[in-house]
Length: 481
Image (cartoon, rainbow, N blue to C red):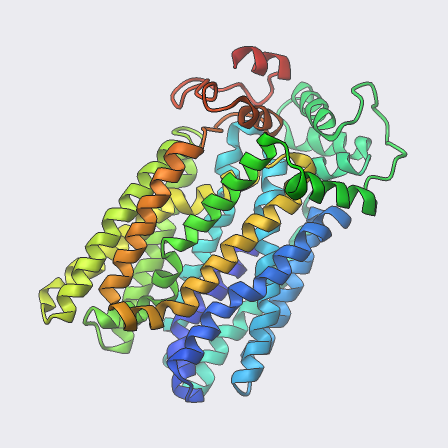
């Protein structure tokens, strides 16, 4: 639900911007700022989420995200002018920051290793469903009077927040957060709920206790308070000031994959797809919105395919194939838009096909794997703060891309801008090939050892080999390695 609301907020603004510009009589620069500033506003939420999720827990942090979404949607829906609209965008942006950080962290901490990729890709799946719903909302409310239509588009985003808040009541707290708080009995109870067998629950608890530095013989609630300011300072010290080689490598990898996800231009396609299609030769508003819905549908369809492949094929092959496909799609889009600029109307089909192919390749790898991989590789003790840093990089990069796209294509042509994104995708492929080991099937506690081993040893087990089972002991996993 968090991800649907987030996706809706992103998707609906792409079409609403057409009507906002017409109704409020604002410039292209103001539209750029309106669409892109959400990502910079979200930095407040992603930074605060690291502290909040360690303080009150993963579950209630999701409630906070829902509250910000609800308030932001209402403010935007009732906005009387550009400044009022920006205030609503700021509040919604905080919710975006919270959601982007907490959804994958919570899921990765609850999911067993055998299906972690499938379950942790759900945030990206439902972000895409939300984007598609935003596009559908654009089309549905486009027939209303201009001054009313865009307000309905933005305002109805408040409704899912209510369902999210109610749904949280049925969710267990993250067992890893409970262990960090010394609440071992409650953590054991949750693990029994989310594990296939009592033995699996016991083994997962032992691994989490070891990662948290709690003695194996301790089976009762700990009396040591683990949420002190000293502990918080120690976490940031370990993460940024004096990281071990393994932690440094994990953080750089998480930051790198989040950076390249956005720098390869996905938000320029999602947020500005009506404008891109207009540049490609499609002029009528309804046709623009219909084609944009096709983008959302394609993106959603292929993300569903990815969820079933993540734990079967593995993260690395999907990511490399996805990035390679994005590279060639961006080259095709750049060529098509350049030809249209030179009067070759026949290239419209190439532009549309390239955009659909691009979002398909993005959704089958780069989209979901960024959130899965970026959350699962970080150690338990620094996961919340490390994820908040990675999400901050993701949002800053997205903000820069979306706030400069119109200016960029006016400076180097719209075709040239997508050639530039293709160059970024090429660099991303090299980075993924050289720096990202396979994590499929490994426990979260085992992944830290994977990054500590170094490149000469991380090929075991290989992409096609059997991985340690979710309920295997740490000793067996070590022996297999």
